[in-house]
Image (cartoon, rainbow, N blue to C red; front, side):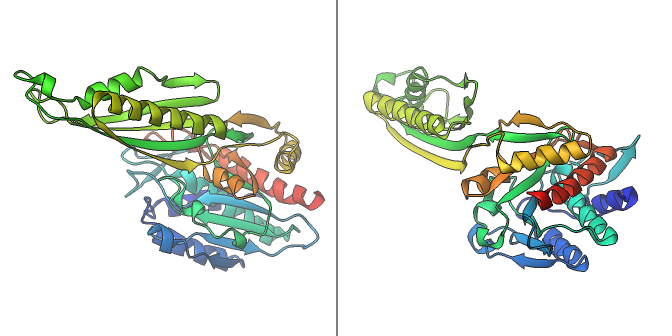
Length: 372
């Protein structure tokens, strides 16, 4: 039986521990202690040496029957801002912050679910296979922690990230590759009123390049955007420097790579023709994945949801999560909805009933894994 009071109190206790990306040490220390008190063995990787974040990733292991299929659950411990001084209020069975900070249900609701699940397994002596619980850092700033993680610490080949919005019952089956790019254009300054012809406008370079390209919704699985443009010194000077920052996303890794290259070529060609210079840098932040509906992880999710009266809903995401990295590194992983809404805003909330439902689903997944 789920202990609702314990579940909520644990969640409230955790969200009061500040863990904005880069400052994860206090929450990781809390979790190391919490998992050890529940009888799990906790391992840390050495990712902090690569990431310079506040802590390492941790993997907590609950020993089970070796004859059953091992599975893992994953959450991230870092939050976005404003995430300091969070105070939780409950209104009609729904948890909110007081309105000046995020709630941090993304992703501490998932962690609370993990811990309640383990409490129940221990109390009711439920037999499972080996279960692993992965707690990553730096997810909110580009999946940095899990990208640097030593995957040899994770025995299970299939897993469930507890980090998607909406009512419990849906799973991400496809997620995009994400490139972030920045473009530095250099022209030549000149007096805009007296001798503009002696200048090379970095803005004109950008305009001619962008006229060759499409942005926004490219097709049903691909988007492109330029979100930041900065440059120039004065209205009477031909603009000699301009910075643009943007992104490309596509469920198809090939389409994403092709579009990034097209943007690079357009800006470089425009710069050359107009007598300027272009420096283009693109960074692959997440590799896209697409799960087959007959995959082991989705079969397990379908069976477990049926066991608790749910029907699995398939979702395609426009964003990335740690599931992208796990899949890219050879694990078979989906991202499950855990009930939170309006994340990354001061209006974030989560119904307690959804947290309870997520605990029930996690237990059903562990039980069903015995038969796979």
